[in-house]
Every structure is written in structure tokens, then in C-alpha cells.
Image (tube, rainbow, N blue to C red):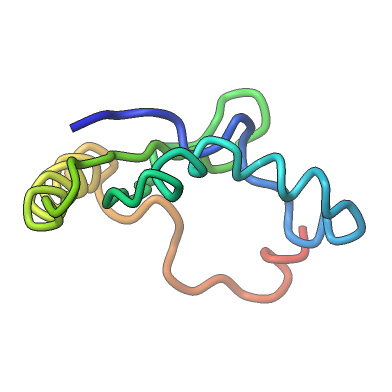
Length: 101
């Protein structure tokens, strides 16, 4: 298993980069190697960044045809993160005012 950042920056604010497709493309740069290699990978949230309060994430990458191992490791990590946070990172339902803020 390999672990790496999912993106080079924190998440964009809702609608922030709609007019900047290059920035949106470049933010996917960390996921390209797994896609090109054809190996299974998944991204998990890793918390909220101190500098801007926006979500960050990491990806785990498994060897070829080891999807079962990826899911087992992902489930274990997710359970540990949820226990550490005391619940989901972001409430499941936000009202529209919170989303637009």
C-alpha cells in the first residue's frame, strides 16, 4: 500500500474555480499516476486545514488486482478517522446559507 496526498491544495470553495479549468485539472495531478498505472486507489478525508478550514485528503494505492486489500485498509482507516473526529468530518446536510458562505 502507498499513501500520498490526493491533491496539492485544500479543497476549493464551492464554485471558486469554475472559470479556471487549468487550476481544476492541476489539482488532480496526484491522482494521475494510479490512473495511468491501472491500480486501485481511493481517497479519504484527512481533516480540515488549519490555514483555511477547508477539507484535505489523502489517497491509498494498492497493488494491481488488490481491490479487496484496498477496501479493507480504507474501511479501517475510515473507522479510525470517524472515531477520532467523533463523527463525519462534515455534517451530512448543510443548509443553503452554510454552503454559500
